Image (cartoon, rainbow, N blue to C red; front, side, top):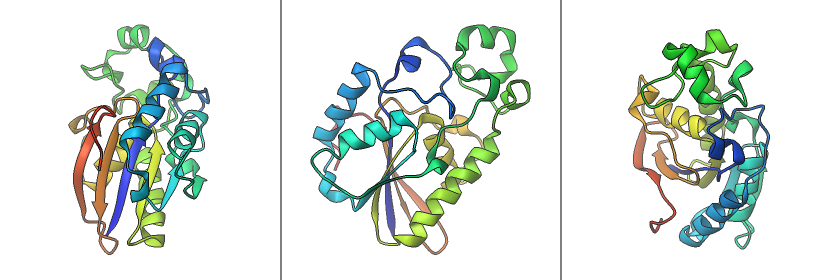
Length: 206
């Protein structure tokens, strides 16, 4: 069985300002995000993991490097773990877009599949396929591995939903910054057990 622990990156200024942050918004962690990652490191048993695989976007890779500061695990970047690309809406404020395009947002203010047409963005199925392709490659390579993925809020929801065969991402909550999820996946058929989801750094993670 392959165990995959998934961490969302720490806070950025885009997160703090309520802006849409996607694959082409390659901005750094802010001070709060750096502190969140440092706090998370205290509560993660880094000896559990064999290696870290991170999105190549700066906010995720910076989080991964902070987590790896003392563990010195093998770490690699993979662009398949990038966030959804929201097209023309990257860097835009959610509130005015939601007012103009209400069908593109759910009641919590998160994008719906309908957004892609008006924003020229990446579709939900494309993100799910991309994340699953990345995960499958590591599950195949490390069938007994304990892997730490550092990625993004929508991307993590997409991967967990795909592994659990959930029809709608609405069935999963958005991950908080430096929120943590864990799945155990059978390499032969990708049968997946969700161990926990969106656990914060204030809880001990074992």
